[in-house]
Every structure is written in structure tokens, then in C-alpha cells.
Length: 346
Image (cartoon, rainbow, N blue to C red; front, side):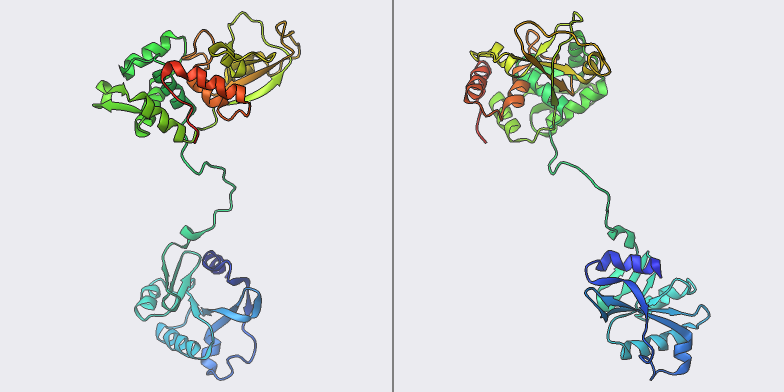
């Protein structure tokens, strides 16, 4: 009866013991011999009180006639002090509709149960199976890193106030960044869904437009953002001739009067990081004047919509928004002034 008990456990995991025990001898002494010879009866105890019956499972012999099964069920219901379920696994399939018709409680494998006394009628018990796999997921849907980058381009006026998918795709390609049209389309649809972009039309001719900047900014501040970078500290920076993208407080110093603290922060993509650091045995000395460097590994290309190889102000703001230093907070306010935006406290 393992399958039957598994099915019941999905419904009564906190009330029912998991092991079935044979019915104690003498319990059914008053029943006719023909009844006792036609069925096998097991009892499931109550959780914490295994001697207290919670359910009785009755297994009829395969050859028992339906009329006899009805009479057996009535006898047992009258004499037992807990609900009775007929185990229908080995009965003829045509009997199951009759069990329902004559209001006889039964369970079939771990798939279905009919028990009016218990208020149960399910034909797919597996729907109630507890999912024991470990899952890690956000409680709220978060704005993706690519959508954040796109709206950053809009708010810093690097994307035209009105544009099409094709036009924006060409603009991004001119920046030397490879992004597929499908990914771009999904990012734009996400912004429209959040009310951060306006749109008109559909298909290839669909047009997008910048919404009111202040209202858009207020909406973004209220949104949950998916993680868009991680940091590592390192004692060298690559000198392969590629211009590095500044980030963190190093970038904020370019947009405000914040003084640099001697720790250089650089942003690079996952691909760039793997190319320059992972598996490298040799170490290249860092730029003179810096004691150490912080590498921010961004999920999306940091150079896209950057200003003078400095991460764009919107993404920079969200990367430092929770910084505890008052100097940094004042510098963030200063950085947002040219765009008419305010670091509103939520």
C-alpha cells in the first residue's frame, strides 16, 4: 500500500503516521466470517498518538463481487471508529464509477481519492505533492540589468526621445557592442510593461518614446533591481591597450567634487574579466598611484552608454545608492543635477 499511503501523506502530512499497521486481532470479532475472509484491513495511526486510529484502509480480494463489497463497507463503517477507505488498486476498473455512485469512499494508488465523509474528491493527487527541491527565487519580479542599461541611456539622453527597435539596434552597434535584436526587443518590452517607456503600434513599425523623466525616475526608485555586477579586489590591472571603464567612487569623482580615495575601481564585462584574469599566472603591476584595484564584473557591457569611459550616471547611482558615506551621498546628488533627477529616499 505504499502508493496509497504516499497519496494520503500529501493531504495529511501533519496528521497521519506514515506506516500502516495490521488491524489488531479481535477488533472485528462480531463480523461474519465471510466478511473477514474477503478483505484485509490496515490502520493508519494519528500523528503523535499511533494507537489512535486516523484512517482504515480496506484491501478487498480481487475476486470479490461489487454487491458483497457494498455490504462489507457498510458493516465496517458501522463498527470502526475512524473513516474507512477501500483500496481500489486491484478492483476491476468498472467498479470505480460504481463506488462513487453508491457513495463508497476509496483511494486508487497515489492518483485519486473519493471520500465524501472527509470532504475529499481528487482525481490528480500528484498536484498536491510537496516540492522538496531547493529553490532560490526573487519574491518580486526584478528589473533586469539590460533593461536598466536601456533606461539609463534614455534618461542620460544618449537614446533619442523617439526611436524604433531597428534604429536603436543600429545605434548600439555603432558603439561597438554586439546585442541581438531579440534581446533588445525583450528589454524594450520590459520597460514598457513597467511604464518606464511609451510605445505605439506593433511589429516592425512599433515606435518607442521617452516618458516624463521625473515620473520615470520615481518608478525606477520603487522597483526591485536584479543584481547587475559583482566586485573583486585585485592587485593588478591589465595593460593590453584597451581603454578601461571607470566605476564606483573612481567614476563618481569624474562627475562630482568627490576626492578619489586611492583605490581604483574598474568595470568590465564577464567576458573581459575571464580573458584578462581567470587562469592567469603572471601579475602585471597596477597603475602608479593606486595601492589596489577593485574590479566590478558587469552582466552587461559597461562601456555601452558610458561617458568618456566612465560608467553612465544612472547605473553608477544604483551601484552606490546604499553607500554609507555621507560624502558619497552628496556626490550622487551632485551627479544627478544635470538630468533634473533627485536622489529620493525610499
